Image (cartoon, rainbow over all chains, first blue to last red; front, side):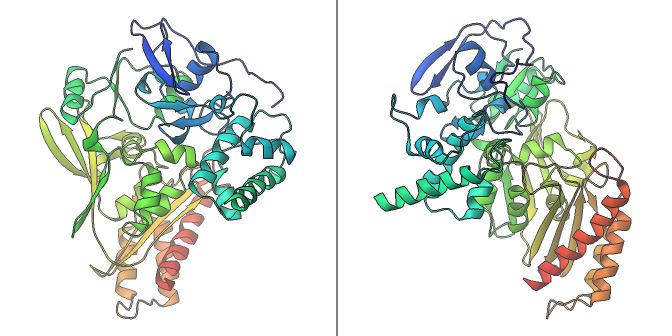
Length: 174
Length: 279
């Protein structure tokens, strides 16, 4: 997982005549000439310069490309970009407010939950999704929630600690 | 590769009638992997996520109807008490991300021998509703799935819903794989102790070219159960497990061996039945 940006394996046949638009982090972005079979992950990274969603397995196994489609956590490698034209797409880039990290992002740093960092954008979006839906998850609920996000560095201990830290902080703030 | 994005059922059926070779895109968790890895090059795509008629589910007195675009997450969260076995099956699918997009209709359309919802649907004699501009028809799931990843769907037909009868009684679904999440099953069991009709229903996945119903095993154990006390002699449970294993038609592949799968069918069958009777 040390390679920060594996060469995309996605083939790129001739562009289709149809141009389309995507709404990403509240902004409308034109996708002028793409092959219509491209995944949302590919379009974000290779056509729109948004590399936050990471490209590892391209088959829904690793969770490193997780983002929100109409508020639902999904693997962007399994979304046809040209079918997301009327959806609200929110990526990891849209979470922080400038340099102001979210509580989840800060907790991952504080807990030492980041090693190579490749899986982290997917885990950050996943943990936000979990804690927004389930503010006080059990350990089993946390493990189930991140079961589709592979991390090959940390052994998950400090990731679980970071989730627990955010849960406690949010509870104390209520 | 043009893409149609119909916003109602009639428009979707018209698209399919115009281009019967079009690939139907439901949740995308199968199709996108095939497209990305160049195993599938659709000439045309009909995307189904905007069609209200395919969403949701209906609970009637005698029947449950699941729309084709019902996601695993919806099943898990909204149908856990109405269709407990289906909710158990849905919860074993992939990861939360996959369950948020993957659909029942997609599971049926792909018709993988390892399709996680198929054993439960088969055990309940599910009927698949197919629509086209020519009309609609219903097929039993047993007739719908004709082989591994093969179905009786005509090219211009769309899977619109799947129906099962409502039955009372405990249900259990068990999936075997290397871990709890993110696995394609090595073997899967769905057992329903149907107290409405006083019969045990049992079906299995990943142990044959299609989901397999263990009809003889069902009959024998149904005769052995005390339906008033909901108990069963232990030797009848063991016999049931062996008969289920006998009904399976497993092969050896990169996920497991035929021998292990046959053994797993017996273990999962007995475990599922015992859990139903203990519930």
